[in-house]
Amino acid sequence: MVQGIDFSPDHKVRLPTRFNVAVPFIDRHLGEGRGAKAAIRTAHETVTYAELAERVNRSGNALLAMGLRPRDRLLMVVKDCPAFFYLFWGAIKAGIVPVPLNTLLRTPDYSYIIDDSGCGLVVHSSEFANEVAPALAQLEDKAPRALTVDAFLAEMARAAPAAEPHLADPADDCFWLYSSGSTGRPKGAVHAQRDMVVTSELYGVRVLGVTEDDICYSAAKLFFAYGLGNAMTFPLWVGATAVLDERRPTPDATFETIEAFESTIFYGVPTLYAAQLAALDARPRRFPSLRACVSAGEALPAEMFRRWKEKTGTVILDGIGSTEALHIFIGNRLDDFRPGTSGRPVPGYAARILDEAGKPVAKGERGRLWIRAESTAKYYWNKPDKTAETMVEGWLDTGDTYRQDEDGYFIYEGRSDDMLKVGGIWCSPVEIENCLIGHPAVLEAAVIGHADADSLIKPKAVVVLKQAADARAALTDELMALCKKTLAPYKYPRWIEYVPELPKTATGKIQRYKLRA
Ligand code: 3UK
Image (cartoon, helix red, strand yellow):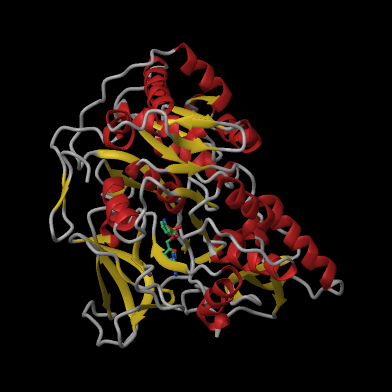
């Protein structure tokens, strides 16, 4: 337990009223004798806790020297590398609000978010300049200052190595994460200082049992709330080691990383586990260093749990989390799991399943899942209507349909809206439809989820053409290529079906659920 931070028996957190969350996550380890211990390991370098603390100070000082002030936003488009930690925690220690963004987005997304956030600075890995630079150019005189991570590291080298934390209240705004919706633009979910303490202690420590001996490796990247907890806040909370790999998480890359660093906990998403299982069929291997694997982002089919256990000897703990809740709120545990379910509520998190009228359903019935916790976002930036809809009297609407089995395990039954999770990442059908409609041959399009051979959902497009076309195979290739070029690459439709017309409501809204049936 961390000094000055207390969890009551009902899992409510008590924090000092004037504090800065960078102190227990970063600086505390020096006083506890971990200065020389590895906080971060990558293929290129090891960063000790002492080095991390100093670089966090330098980063905060560099941000202030560049003119940022407490409460200003720092947008980060940063790959998984130690500088992600420096930027995130340096900002927080100085009272600046870091906003890590999905690095797979495209120019229009970046330009919208840069504008929406009103940020004072954008720092991006040079790899993403192709998408970020045009976004800044589009904003013309409204564009904030921007620099690459390398340029920022040079600023850090010139900054002072010591810093006093900017004191805040545990409920004060601390960092944002953008989340997408089926209609409308991404929403900035504003998280408080205390939220990372709550997820790290309640899920990281009490469910996963993360200790300072763990070596945490997440194939899900740090920009994702899932990766942020997995490979940054959980290890930092207990003084463990985070392993970072900037590469695309292919089966070979992930296996190599688990083995090279002797990772003890591995975090993936079902799409990756499916690819890894196929690779294990071709070349069996076991991972003796692993004590637990975790899956989130979309439901993990029971069959994949079984095959992974058979091949690696390790269980995969499926859990449902969200950007708004910050991390997993219903999850399986090493001492209590049921394959094919999301598990049971994490201690300290309340969950209820409500019918259309807002009344709790009878046990076993499906309904909409609402949760209550101390780690949930305070509000959406600039979106009072979305905030009022989603966050009601302390409860958060997950937008998911669930039921409970006879023993209280929660079973995922799909989304309440039309949103898709592809490889664990949000995908709006409307966005893909708009891209398809941009093709001269397409009159209308509807995008729905369709299960692949591993029972995982991928986008499928149902298209109405302006004129009957003969060369459909060529057109299908063209439409897929258009989506790959325009949208984040994982969003392209894997199947395209041509129909004469789409089902619609009297008001002309596409009835995607009829196409799913
Ligand atoms: C879906 C799941 C079934 C569900 C996330 C762990 O995925 C995360 O956050 P997002 O905001 O998406 C949230 C939505 O994704 N989902 C997530 N996990 C599962 N559906 N089974 C699951 N195990 O629709 C949920 O509402 O991108 C996951 C930790 C932190 C996260 N942010």
